[in-house]
Image (tube, rainbow, N blue to C red; front, side, top):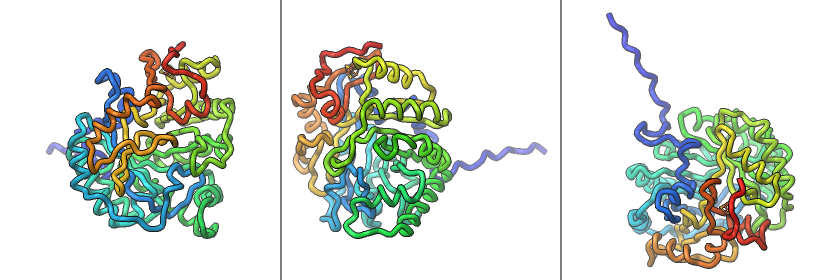
Length: 384
Ligand code: SF4
């Protein structure tokens, strides 16, 4: 009798086999892909702010100023799906907050319809979560999700307590924080084990720059498929935090490259180092990043292939740059139209450069404002 080998069942949250795996070679969030494909920047990515509620108050939180205790009703989901239908080149959506899963109602009425819609069109999805709530919430959405994106800046529960509740209006005890920390690690580990692509993001800042390799090790131990690393730029809510010098940042990135697990994808973003840089040490690092296996540097999506939509007001933001107010509103405008208006705005033109040889399409506005105030990137060229 011939024996049949039954192929092992795919883990329950593994993506459908007909979708292209998300890998260093295929990162649909990188705006360089659409720039290459269409010869101009095109809207391929829509981020939704689905809540302003969160159980944490992180000191670095980019949306910290807008976190609240209560919130108004969401816009009708049909309007949102119609606006997505109209985006000609849509490839990805991202769902962010606050903590998007904070209220189960949001999970059922907003996250699930958006994720199911995305899956039905082959559009890839990411959820930004702190994964500190009940596993059941994440189990509900995981079958339809491509990337679970978590923040991880810690080497122990004490760091989590210090960083995660820095802005809390009422004191949070060390033991309560430790329980959440354990749950976060356990949830991330389980989701990864059950086949979900978990990507952990760390910031290089005054707290983490000299222990970023230890943080990396814990992220690998949790089973994350990707470690995403960005420098922290003190803005709005985090404006009181110390800023690192570019030398410190360069050292932290180089140290991480020396100590990383080469089998785990490392994605860097919003780095202040460019192939056109005046400093040869910057160019050396850019060269090294480009040559390492399983390492990518994602171009900044803000305003290049992505807009952010607030699901309460309908406001459309084209960048997290503080001086740019909402640029349109989904109640009355198509997203492609808002995006087109932004492409000719003088602020966008300022950083609208492209060096094909370096695979680079210019700096993030905050980075340019913070480190390169007097540099006109449109007059620069990659030197490597
Ligand atoms: S695209 Fe812009 S930032 Fe990048 S290397 Fe060229 S000039 Fe510099």
